[in-house]
Amino acid sequence: MVIVGQPSPCPPAGRTPGDFAITTAFGDGTSAPTPVTDNRLWFVGGPHTYRRAGTYTATATMTDRTTGAVTTLRRPIVVPNAPLTALRSARPTFTAKKTSRALIARFRDGNPLAVARDHRATISWGDRTTSKGRIVRVAPGQFAVRGDHRYRTAAKRRIVIRISDDRGATLRVRSTPRIRVR
Image 1: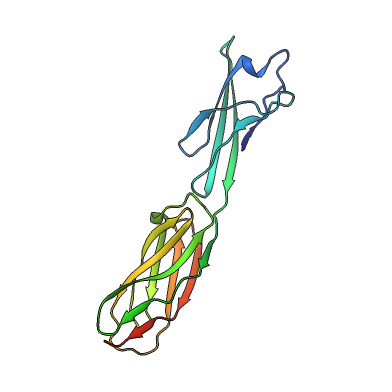
Image 2: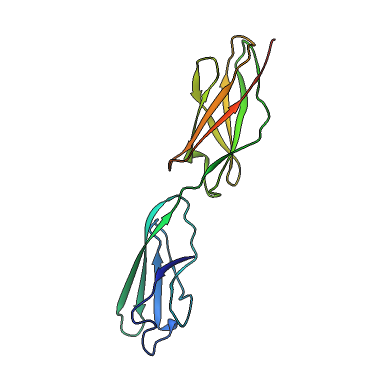
């Protein structure tokens, strides 16, 4: 629920919420007719979900249906960035001297509205090479990192995946791959 504020005086003398057309612009490109949430105190605002972290200015406009007078209320809304959390995943399996595609890591974004393109992954393969990982959404707020790689030998390696979102959250995940010999 986004509460933008209260008109002054509150409530306007002899008026009811039905005497006004109230719309809230949430500062993220969306707006909606919004009700007064309390008939005694007239908190103006409405339900809204922000898809991305950031600072927004919510603006409520109250238009008197009788006189046409307009009252505007503004309030900054700060939406913090949701954390990234590693999820359990199976060890990836590769075949030496053959390019293999594998699921390298899984993670959760605390923002259930996040999409794959909000994230980036860099995979350090443990053999002095790195590449970008492909992020795919597997459920609301859950993602997998996939990668293609070719190991020259079956030596033991440690993979490090660095995941970040477009709002600054970061996560580091480690994995030990199985590398088979053909």
